[in-house]
Image (tube, rainbow, N blue to C red; front, side, top):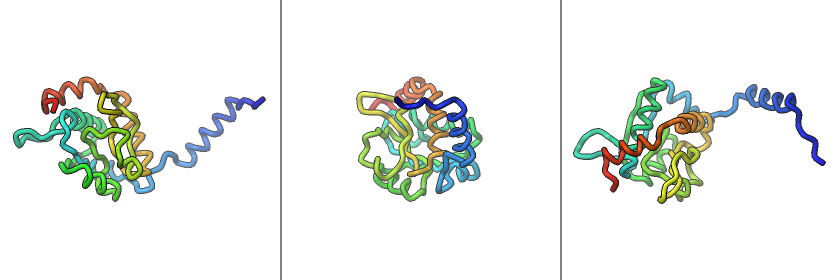
Length: 164
């Protein structure tokens, strides 16, 4: 029969992990974002992200990123582009985040990081794409998404972008 770990042993492991400064961002994304703002690649995919009639960007994920940045005092720079180009640039750490209706079973899953699923829909489990290996940055986004009102953001995205 396996021995159970005591509360003291579990606390010792947690303390050790904290002392090791985990989670880490090997490329410093969380620190860079705090200093210079978030560089966001945006894939046009209504109702998640869109630009309509020459106006500013809109959509559920655009609104969520704006809310995340506003709450933390981060500046934002959005760049609209194609999925392949943006995700390749994310892999090279040229962006801090790529949004636009991405789903967890993306063919890019081996090349970039993804947040945990924040919304399940008929088209898949929706995620944000993040630079590979940047765990502290990813955890910040996941903590925010875990408390965000996704249904309200999606309703605004549908109103702003349409559903197609």
